[in-house]
Image (tube, rainbow, N blue to C red):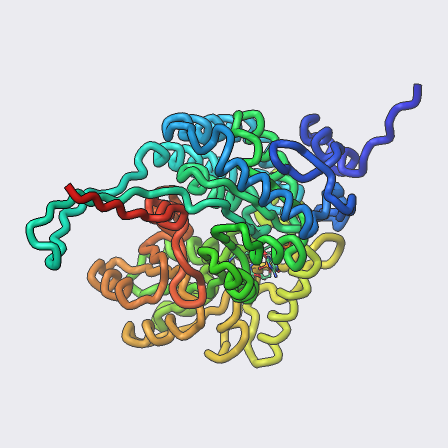
Length: 507
Ligand code: NAP
Ligand code: MG
């Protein structure tokens, strides 16, 4: 008997849990109508380990035909079968059970996420997976609390008549959900949780760069006992599968997270049947440090505001506005934090920052860095890719940037921050609000009135004061301006997944 040769990842990452190895080596298919099936064309595509550039696994490439099948399955699950007649309590319990399963497989999911996306395993384990669990639990609770109102109506043109009027919230229907690669499992949870709590059915299209954790999640969804077709999961490309989903005439709503550019395409694609659209798009978030801030907290926090997840966060604090009096100290402090960050593969417990997700992102981020330098901005630290294998970029802090430069205006989606001095607080609102985005903002000061005043003036969906990157399933998240439409999380998201029906009875 000959021993099976070890896969390269078993050699490279010798302590990979066995269940991860066998998952990676299994046949990856798409989930349609409760069944794992090959794509109609049988085509596959590779997903890479960004720390080495090597192929981790091949997954099915869904085409428009697969989207069609998945939408049919979701429609049928919405209208027939057990899902629409389940009680809210039963629905809530299923979501809760899924949360328990994700929690029980937290280590495994964190390793899969780290391998596919590049983020440190410890971060995936401490942040991505627990937040996904918490989101499912939070939304499980909402399933039994989606209520309408009774409304006293007067109807002046029917004098003397009496009415009883009330509203009910019904599931919006079949939801197409398209997610990015920066927090693959967590974005799946943000999308699936509220849709399921509201009684919708879903076709989820995951990002081509990071398909694996959602496929494992799909197995757990089946294990939890969701009826077939309630959740369908497709791996495939945006231009084909994603576009087919966004334009599908039998999809009632599309929810998208990703770039503002693709967000615009989603809106156009959705126009055919005027499906409901929610968008969580890019950002160029200002993080404002006043001289009276507690700098020993503000400095490391300003670094992590941008370097967390390698800068691949839509809400990353990429424009660091610092009051002139403390500018040098804060910039040097953030640069020092950057110097201390240990780059390496996500699998290494010492790693604090992994590689960017793909070669394409590496090139994109390096292009922005070059544009910054050519325009006269100066990197105090970083400013280049790390030599050797993998898609690593050094954490970078720019100074001397001009307001109209691409590094100040555009979403880089890498570990790059631009520090900009200001003299007077009145300069901040116009400067901070001058990009097309409005996702998040940070304020650091001990003056509570100043903080609230500025919070009111910032055009941002989330404002963090003396903290940054604080997320909770109960706290709505979304963008002003071109950062998006609608909100995720909190009870605000329930409106995005329900239709409001008014019922009026003449007594
Ligand atoms: P992207 O193209 O916007 O991708 C996001 C999702 O949309 C992926 O699932 C993608 O599929 C899909 N998609 C792409 N084109 C589509 C289309 N025409 N119709 C329907 N779906 C489509 O993002 P990216 O190219 O991966 O990254 C580019 C930039 O977007 C980043 O550098 C960053 O600035 C921004 N971004 C923002 C976020 C965020 O959280 N706001 C997340 C990721 C990226 P495939 O990946 O399979 O092609
Ligand atoms: Mg990958």
